Structures are given as structure tokens and as C-alpha cells.
Amino acid sequence: MSFWDLSDGGQAKSETTYEAPTGGGEPIPDNTNVVAFAEKAEWSKFYQSEDEFINIQWRVTKPGAFKNRVIFQKLDVFGKDARAKDPKKKSDNAKRMLAAIDANAGGQLATVEGAPTSEDLTRCLSNKFMTIKVMKWEMDNDAGEKMSGNWISAVSPKSDVNEPVVQQQAQHNNGYGSGGTPMDDGDDIPFGPVTLI
Image (cartoon, rainbow, N blue to C red; front, side, top):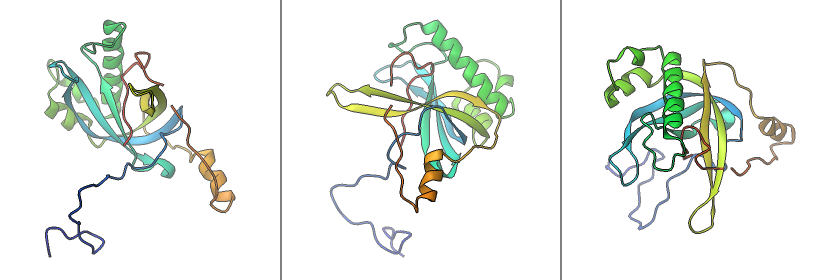
């Protein structure tokens, strides 16, 4: 077996371009509850800064229409985001969100003395299932092009979630249907924008 063999029996080709699969086109619709778990939880640095925030990478498991989608959540627990209108409020909201995530994950992070390390975040938060409420954002980039993605507005204990209505209609229409809507960013998002991949 060659190092370059792929699981489908083919081989990775020596080509100059490659675009990784993104997990599915349009962002998850606004105000959607999904079941997800934290795949990664660690400290990261703001762009061109030494200031840190907590970065949580969520993987969606239910409903099936969004299964395996990844959403990044930025928690500015120290209020260091240079774009924040009210750094103290942003910090407080991020700490409340982190405390709720921890409570749904078993409450171990709350027992850590001082600020948790990346190892603490991984140990206490990873692979714990809960329900997250996904919102959407949309903004123009510097080139005037529309960008969109998802952010997390709430967490709660794991619960049943319904398949989206669009998905159900597609099944009733012999597989034909449409879905997806565009998305809004800015400092009004309480926990910083997240990116859909």
C-alpha cells in the first residue's frame, strides 16, 4: 500500500490546485436548534495580536440535514476584541456562555483554579453533546462581496431536534426542493462571528 492511496481505491494526484470539501453550501438557517459536541476547545490569538480568546469547534450530529457541519465559536472572555463596542459586556456574555457550556458538559471547568488552560478546556468540554441554537450572519468584505456564516446564540441540555421543514418538503416532492438563505455580522453578535466550514 502506497502512502498516497486513498480510501476509495484511488490515489492522491500531483496537481497544483485542490479545494477541500466545505461540508455543505449555505449556512444553517437562522434560529435553528441542533445537537452538537465540542470537537476542540482551546485558546487562540486574535489576528495580529497577542490577546487571546477561547475557540470552540463544534460538530453538528443532528438533525441529519446538517450532520457533520462545523461551527467555530469565539468566546472573548477577557474583552480584548478591538472591534468590541463594550468590551466589559462582551467579556461578561462570553463568560456566561462558557459557564453554560461547562454546566452542560458536566461542570468540571468551574472547578479549575484561575483561567483554564487549553488542556483544561479540551479535557472538560470536548465530546460532550448538547443543543446549540445557531444564528446566521451576513456582511460585505472589503471587496464588497457577501460573506455569510453561523454563530451560536444559546446552549442547553441535549434534546431532540426536528429535521428542517425544507428537508421534509424535499422528501415529499420526490427529492426536489430548495433551501438555504443568506446571513449579518458585526459587534452586535455577542460572542464574535464564527465560520462555517
